[in-house]
Length: 287
Image (cartoon, rainbow, N blue to C red; front, side, top):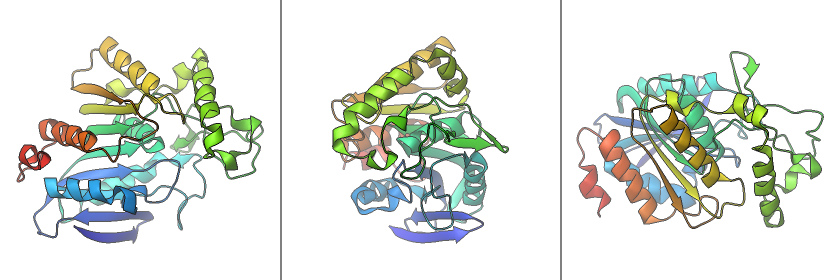
C-alpha cells in the first residue's frame, strides 16, 4: 500500500492506493471527534491495507483539529467535503466520480448527512453513527451554554442540531472513562426533545445507494444502537429502495473496528453494492 500526502486546494488528507497504476473505485474515510486523519493512524492501518487489497483507493480526509483546518468541530462547512469529492474524482488513481463513504462516530454522522445530499455517493458504511445532527464540540474550557453551535454548516448557515447538554462539565474531560456513562445518558435524554430531533434528523432516505450501519450495544459515548434502530425504522417507513442493514455488536463505542467479522461484513457489503471492477472482493474477504 502506497500513501500520498495531500495538502492542496485547502484539503488535508492521505491518499492510499496499491501502486499498480490501475484506476480503482474511490472510498472516502472520515474520522470522529478525535480530529485529524484518524484512518491514517497505526491502529486502523490494517483495515486500510485490507480495503486497498480488495481493489479500492482510499482518501483519509481530515476536516478539523489539524494544521490548516478549523481547530474545533463546530460549523464545519459541508462544502469542504464536496470539494474533496470533486478533487478525488479527478485523480488518475480513481476510475469514476462515484464514491463510497466509511465514517466512524462523528464521521459517520457527517457521512450519512453527505450521502443524503450528494447523488454521487453510492454506498455508505456508518460505524457507531448518529441519526441526528448534534451540537458541535468547542475547545476545552468553553461554556457551551452561552456559545452553542451546530457541528456542521452549509451555504453559510448552521444546520439544525440537537443540543447535547454538555454544559454541566468541562468539555476537556469528555474522553474520561468516568464520564462515558454520563455521555450516553445525556444523549438519550437529548433525543427525547422531539422538536429538536425532528428538525435535526438526518434524511437518510434521500441517500441514493446502499447503507450499512454498525453499532456497539454497550456504547457509552452515545446511544448508537438506538439511533441505528431509529434510522432503520425511518428507512422502512419511507420505502427506501436501496439495501440497508444494521449490525449490532456486543461491544462498546467502535469496539468492533478491529474485528475481522466487521471488515468481512464491510467487504461483503462493498462486493454487493460497490464492487471494484477488477478485483474479486468475495475471495479476498475470505483470506
